[in-house]
Length: 416
Image (cartoon, rainbow, N blue to C red; front, side, top):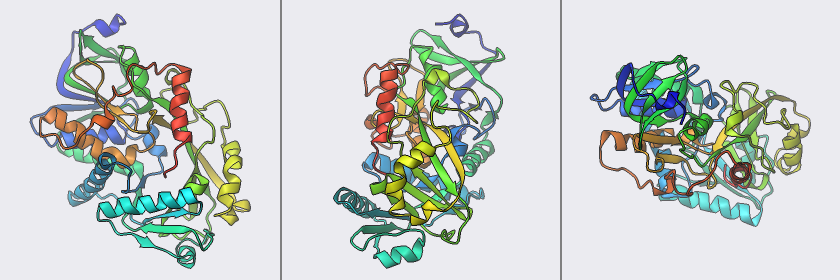
């Protein structure tokens, strides 16, 4: 423990400190503010939504493999509707998601996705190849492929969602402090008691929530709190504008190509999974990740070349259509692709809200509701055992071997 971290005199006290002003931190502020008795302060070291949130693709799909994850995503849809009801406008592009499988394994995955949607009483439309082409002129699919359209899915601007959560939180009394970087967690025995800011100010709290995304690991590590996740590359490309991409065409999930796509300002945004692990150490992350490099293939050309053949089979125009942008982001991946939510180890007063494995936007409302019940003291809404930060036992997140293990979880992922 550092000398600074063992100092406990404090200039201010609050009930809850939220570290991180991305979509998760702001969602937590919004949900916790429903208890008017709580004093809540959110700390963001730069500006709201300026970290990984602004680079996310923003896909919102309801059909998920476990009831727990489905419940988290459904709550995010409910939060968006609630914010709109409160007069905080969030444009949700309900274009639907189109799942296409041609190989036996991909067809089985599409069928399973359709079954999961029907379990939630969400509609499913099975499309023929010509119907797929009508909705997505850029897509070319053989007649024997399975194509399921889930019309209630869509995508959202992650930054706008973050700002909407923040606006709702502010309205209900949450103090939001930007340009307030946390230097250390403060600890007294088996309890985290607050934080020290970079300028030396100390804040004490009954609860400290670590929603700092990929920066969560290094912050917790200093206090011998080990978060089982690693910074892994996620990225996507955006094509030049073309009539091939109607603005209301559905999102597309292509498990055969390990790819997803959605319309984006006249072009097509599409993502490909790295076919080998690309990751970094939590200790390497700068405060500002704009321009951050993982140390290989900075422009994404190698990854695009590796996945080109499989994607081109569905997207023939890819061969000659210009690429306008490549966007690289950091996803905080866990070995099983599920988030880290709740108390870390035996230390009290400290809650992890991180490790979302590329799904932070879609899980934001559900995570905020889940963790707010612990603090507000309302009845537990959902079994959270699958999300326990302690489920992997003691791990060393600074170990290259462990970081690679997390990156492989992304490389081997088969869903959108």
